[in-house]
Length: 193
Image (cartoon, rainbow, N blue to C red):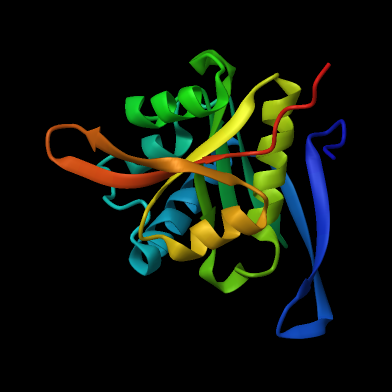
């Protein structure tokens, strides 16, 4: 749950050493975080090829001006993760989600730009960021969805263990020369009422 100051503190065990614990803060991203988020995106891209192509304006890609809200996870002042909630994705992704959920596209919240420092993976960072994004989508009456390229097996495993449902596969086109095969995932249903 987010506190009135929009912060979530999560304490998770470090898996290789269950005696060691760290305190992670998840909070709304601010402008001052963007340089660290860009650095993190470069590191993740080198390891995972995500984002598949580094845009010329990586800072703009991360800041996503159309984002409804974005968060960072930090530990001891270091940004170790990032996620955003957006109103849209590619036309193919939205069409599949609309068909699967039978809701209009303006009732979807797209979880995007999920990045976690390689040194902090398997410690609950991504799961915590997904939870915060889902809670915010639900608070806005939106159904969370996301898309992931089909070769990102670790991300796919995370989404499925977090209870997300695969709706299907689409081919998305970005510009004239970028074509991606992606799975579309549906998050937990918003509470009724």
